[in-house]
Image (cartoon, rainbow, N blue to C red; front, side, top):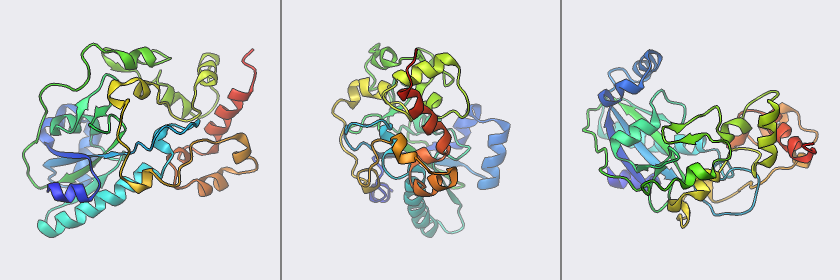
Length: 277
């Protein structure tokens, strides 16, 4: 199994018994899991590194390469194909940020990485610059975690101090305050949020808490070419000029920042050019 995941490009992997995740699942999530994988018993979890360096830009590091949904789905499907051959009659369903499985909780139970103060998983030597992917299966496997201890410096608080909106607290992340979430919202925004976006170094996503994390200071570069090549570090209003929403989605279909359409990005870029007074 280790060789299989290494060949797929995973930096770490593990297995979590689905029964251990019941407290994290809504009734709707349980129904979706049963529909996707009847008799599901195990969740396989893998971490894929995406860090490509610190080239200046106004887009979050996670969305500069190929859309991670596409990359992880493709790589996870490769794993599924091998597992289907090894275990005839068993079901294997890949998920990449589109699964009813709570990925962070599954990673915790599977022992994949360690929890950081920013709520993300830390997987040395790649720090928290990783994406999580899952495979649901009716094959029964024992959980490989959770891991003992933590790699997050005790009481470090660097990520919380770096968060400009106060979204990070001892109890977790308030998504409604998270700057990454705010950049992706559609429609008009309250004046206070607009001011926050004007001061943000990114017009899509936010890397401030991860930039401050000690475990990310010397993060290793991703070995995956999809996240190292054909990068788009920045966008300008000139890049979007004359593009309809349909044309924008077509031109940037391979990028993770395109899923919301052109409007949020255009609004955020315009905010940065306006005088806040």
